[in-house]
Length: 283
Ligand code: NAP
Image 1 (tube, rainbow, N blue to C red):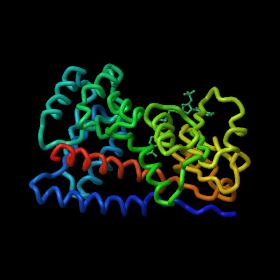
Image 2: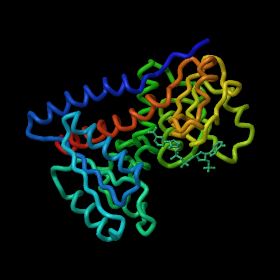
Image 3: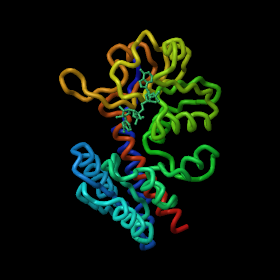
Image 4: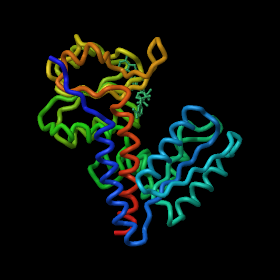
């Protein structure tokens, strides 16, 4: 069996077109959805991420502001900037790119963002809203994974989903989103014993670890849906996921590639959240 690809680039294109249409409808009312991206320091990976986010906004007809500060910026200066953005009516979403320099308390900064503008979905109010099923912003990466499942018409009710990884930004919110769709969810992590026994029972597997080949073909039930969140480098320095793609695609029913899978969906869901924030602010 060869799995069907879930193409994150094609799905992103479709969703970004929908965002652009909704942005136009807001613009007709004199509102341009706006995202502020704040970068502190010169982490090369972060610079690429923020550039991509700002460009995606511009392409989608959203207003975006990139604020860059040097690594010496103090925590109180950053908190003051966040406060100013909270009060800026032209800004509907605020994203402070992580990681922050060590002298800044990232959690404190995250909690300083108004939950109404928390388009990354990292604020504890957003986490609480997800947990309780209340309206709020969902973290972009697991939200993108849910959209990928939706795109193939996958019915999660009663299915067994195994999430490998329990971070606050991917694994845990992913598990909650699957649970909200009535899947039976198992969360695995570095202390999980007999990972293979669990993944072999899964109808859906989400790998969010950050290590190559965490999931190999012998660990996958034939026909299972495999979503690969991981971003790693192989021996040739090329981008790869957590899943042994070549092997697993022969067993799985659906699989996401890396690159071109979950990655583009993450930025797309940031645009969706920003648009949603602007719509809510003006409803
Ligand atoms: P993280 O905070 O480092 O969490 C990794 C998780 O994997 C932890 O819960 C850890 O368990 C678990 N783990 C480690 N080794 C394991 C093993 N051998 N077996 C089972 N579980 C294991 O990472 P993250 O932020 O969630 O990101 C995960 C990956 O996704 C990374 O590669 C990251 O770059 C990528 N990512 C991609 C996107 C995207 O847009 N595509 C977005 C975000 C993240 P413990 O909790 O026990 O330590």
